[in-house]
Length: 389
Image 1 (tube, rainbow, N blue to C red):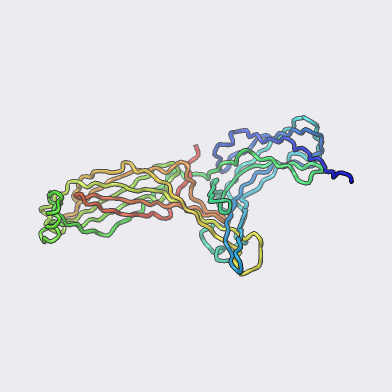
Image 2: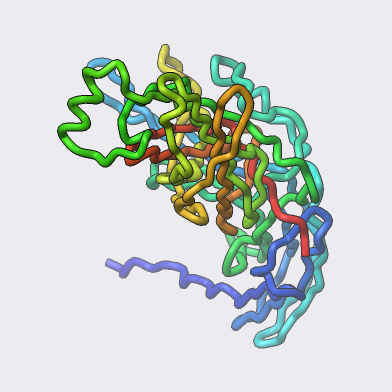
């Protein structure tokens, strides 16, 4: 019997993508993406077509388990394009052995993602208003990766595609890394402060009149009608419009209103602290069923991922002096400062990804050794891209 024969695999040519500028830079809308495509082949061959493609897209993927008689894992996937530009390099050209061929290419980042992706989603998820189904500004580069079965990405890149005669598949060359993109920054903007107030809390203690903390004094305070007392209100103002890499203020005000024996109360200072501060990233994304199997099970799926980034408030605490207010009210005001990390992705919404942020914090006021906490959530914080430098 004759031995089995097989066609020897044709070696792929060497194809390189060389950018004119550092491809690791951050690109903006209108930025030029240009460079040179280099081809070197170890064998002679006929090149039918060669082009370079510049594209932006978002990919979402998640899974769900369908249960009938047995369990089945269903994959949901979507690959939605923002744009795709192609530049022809050459066609119908003979490639010599070892010779170096070069072609220049040039593209520009657009300002808007112009493809309409509303139509694939027809059910509850399609009716959701958290996604931007119409043309919208290009979103920043983004990766939210939970596992191989759950992720959402926004990517911009270039491919060089070479089609050779006699080859079943084209040869595709990719750069070492995707391009990093940020939308334009808005420049100077108001902070859009949001104010939060905790209901009044009562505090009765002989410590308000200068007594020291002791078991005996605590027992007397509990049963005596002559114990000095105050009502304490905690208020905090935090901006909901932030900049990537930018600083932002946190304003805290402790309002103290004497309610019993005010003449005896001496409260020259209050200690104010920011005990906890974090920026929470919340990403929701949707995808379409892969196998298009007709059943009552969902044809669309949605997933959500959340993670928190700890921030530092400066300073961590302040001893605040008393300021006399109206109607016998005393004020103790403190200002803190924090910074948004430079690697935080700005807020954005696209055809199938919505990336939002919120601030979670705990403010504490210490009055004569008694601590009062205020837990605050600032929803729908918008983080903006920095201005181009």
